[in-house]
Image (cartoon, rainbow, N blue to C red; front, side, top):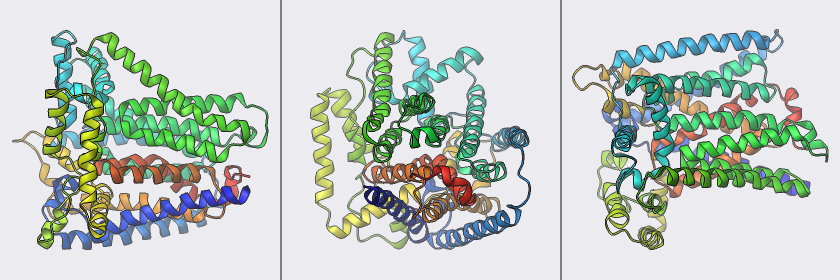
Length: 526
């Protein structure tokens, strides 16, 4: 039985290493070129981008080697006290907030963009028309309703000024960083190394630039960080692991883990993978009757989902209860732009993007759902038929090319679509947007973000290798989540923003990689 468990642990470890290696490989060999991947990339040829990515990758390796050398030298020195480390990170958060605010003012970001703009627009419609939306964007995309109500609360407190929303999201992201720091400490990582590991999130400019966009990406990271905070407490409870008696405190930690994961799911549907990963982890690590704990995440998300739907119906937001276009739309769109044409030039090959947002696919789905008002099962059938047809018309080689292209779309961009969002949000006449694309500052910012992205991917690989023969609980859960999330995005709509989803668990993995193995004995499954 023990051998079987170790084998399962190693399977997830190997898959995680393979997938992160694949992500790195696409950025080094087949990076996507275009504005959604980086304003800097759109201004340069694929040859320059590949060379820069190779340099950034080597530099990220050197950073890891330098940190490993430094930690070995400083390991004998006295650690910071908890009070000192908390004061340090609080001061850093204040400075971080000021820097971000000044950067927003410097560039001239002041307008809501994309789905944020649409959600705010429909909030106004919601308030003006007496809770009658009709058949529109929000009717087919109710997943943004939680965000809309969050905007509504901010509007009641601070008025309709978009600046208030930006300030609120800066605060939210600061709390995300703080919860990530405390999660690192929960795993027994020293205060110094916890501060060092969380610097990845401080310096993740690609995430920071998404903060003023004020969309579900940052909101979902916030809920993930709280869920991770409680789950990191859950997995180190010795009584829960080594004794058969029920440990009430562990159950409380697990309950709060599921609650905030469920809130995260309501804010962003892709967090369903995080919830599934919780259940899979509990199934493979718990014994006998404790395997029933796998029901906790599903029961929690079920209760929250039912409660949320009843709240929506009680609010009478929609004229009927048929809201929400089928998710099979995103599977169908995940195979858009296939097959990849063979007569493309080299530059065009690097610009081709499989699975990204496709206006024709969206129009088709809206026609079925909004205009013809077909039953959802019939819509699902039609969308899956198109997806099935697209996939089956591809040869084996074309399928491999399409999947590799999708991996490149989602994982090869350190920018995570952030600079493109800023292009949409700045004052069109008075801005300094050129900072993202010119030869000096654009180069620095681009390389900065690519190095951080490589640190995340390498951190997953190195920590998994370190604990490959020693079953570490956090590594186990993180690799289950990363493996599931990567596979899910192979069939889902592709977007560079989605790579942000693994940042929080990966940063904890980096902390475990840097810390002494002797201090992690309580994280090993016996």
